[in-house]
Length: 90
Image 1 (cartoon, rainbow, N blue to C red):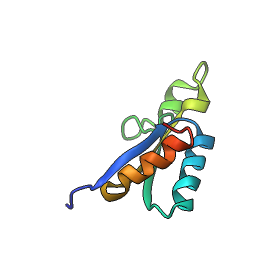
Image 2: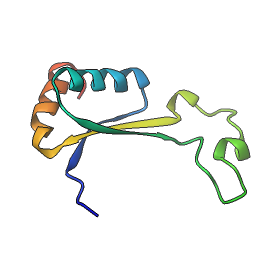
Image 3: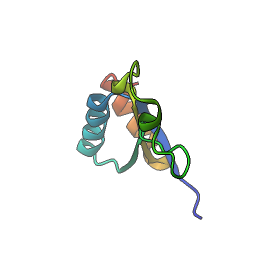
């Protein structure tokens, strides 16, 4: 497996901020990778279903059920952090 030369520049639960950060990076031609991890949709055990299916969602903050992370190449890290800082995303 190749080493991961990408560093995280954003991690959060807000889909609006997530998309705004992606738009900023796109506007400055910075390539990125992202992940969206749905904590409520995780499988428990084979044949047991998901967390939401087993325990329900009563009382759970569904707006914070999906965690987003954006990573940029190490060579673009300083530029990306500067752009995000200048736009209030740090």
